[in-house]
Amino acid sequence: MTGAPLLDTTSVPSPPYLDAPHVRYFWEKGMGKDLTTWTGASLSEKDFPRFYPLYHSFDGLSDTAVLDTYLSLPYPEASVLIQRFLKGEKPLENTKVPQSLPLLVASMHRPEWFDSTLASHGASLCMRAGTNALMILRDFTLMGGYDFAYLNKPLIYTGALKKGAVKRLKDTLEFWVAVTRENALEPGSEAMQLILRTRMMHSYARLKIKEHAKDWDFVRWGEPINTWDMVATYTGFSLIFMLGLKKMGMHITAKEEKGLFHLWKYVGYLLGIPHEVLPSSAKQATEWFYLWTLMQAPGDAHSKELAQALLEENLQSTIYPFLWQRKAMRTLHQSMSSYLLDPPTLQRLGIATEGSHHLFPKFVTKINYGLKRFYPVGEPKRYEAMKKKGHQQQLKVLSDYIKHTPKDFRY
Image (tube, rainbow, N blue to C red; front, side, top):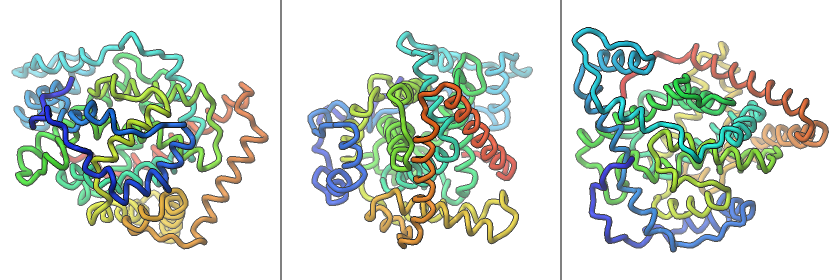
C-alpha cells in the first residue's frame, strides 16, 4: 500500500537526465551496456509516465503504524510493544496495541502468485555464492549505488554517514542473509519479523526526515525512501547482484535467475512495494531500471563521503585484531570495486584504479571459472555441497559483524 503523492503528479515531466553525459556513458559504454547485452533489453522512455508517480509515493500503511507506536510512545516502550506483538505475547499493562499494527501485519499475507519452490532456487544461488556474494553486495552493489546522488539523500539526512559504515554493513548483511535462506519466509519466522522491523524503520526515517528536513527537495529527490527508489534498491539485490557474479566468473542457472527475481519480488512486496512494479525477469528489470536512472544525478560530494566511509570500514572494525590485517582487507575491497565499477563512477567516488589492484579480483575470477569447469552445478551432490559451504561462509562473516558491531541506535 502506498501513500498519496505529496505533489500533483498528473502532469509528468520529461525525464530530467535523459541525455545527461553520466546516463549516456552508463548505458552506452558502462555497466548498463553490460546489462543490455546480457538481458537483451530494449531501452525506451515510453513507460516513464507509468513509473514517475512512484517517485512521490510511499508506504502509507507502515507510516500510520509508526505514528501510532514509535512516534506516540517513548521509543523503548514502543519497541517492547512491537516485539511482544510479533511474538504473539500480550502487551504490557496500560499499553494498547493500535489497530494500525495488526493491519500492517495482515497486509504481509502470502499472495497467490508466490511460488516457494521457485523462490528456493533464488535462495540457493545466494547461498552457494558464498563469499563471492558478500564481495559483490559490498563492493559492487552497495558501492555502485552511492553514485546515484539522490538515492543517498535519506542516508545523509538521517545522519547514517556519521553513525558509521560498520553498523550499516551489519544491518544490510543481517537482512540479506535472513531473507535469502531456503524456506526462510514462513509466517511468523525470524526473517518475516526482521522484514516488518525494516519496513517500519524505513517509515520512521521517512517521517523524521519530513519533520526535520525543511530543505528536502521533493521535486528532485521525490519522497524520502520513496517507492521507486525502493524498487531500484531491490533490483540491486537481484539484477545487479547477478551481473556482479557473472563478472566474477560464476555460472547462474536459468532456474536460479528466475528464482532470484521471484524471491526479491516477494521480499519487496512484504516491504510494502506493489508487486506489479517489481520485475520478474532480467530483461524487464533492466528496462525498468533504465527509467529510474533517468531521475538520478551523478555522484556528488556526499556520494564520495559515503564511498570513502565504506572503504575505511575495515580500519574501524575490530574483526581483525592487527592493523596490517585491516589495511589488507581495505586494499582487497578497493581492488574489487575498481575492477567491477565503471571508470567515471570510480572517479566520482574517489576510488583508486591502479592496475595492480586488479590482481585479487582476477585471481578470484579464475578460481570461479575453474570451479565452474570441475564442479558443474548440474550435479546434485556437488551443488548441495557448494550451497552448504557457501551458507557456512556467510554465517561466519555475519557472526563476526554482529560480535564486533555496537548495539542498535535510533534512526
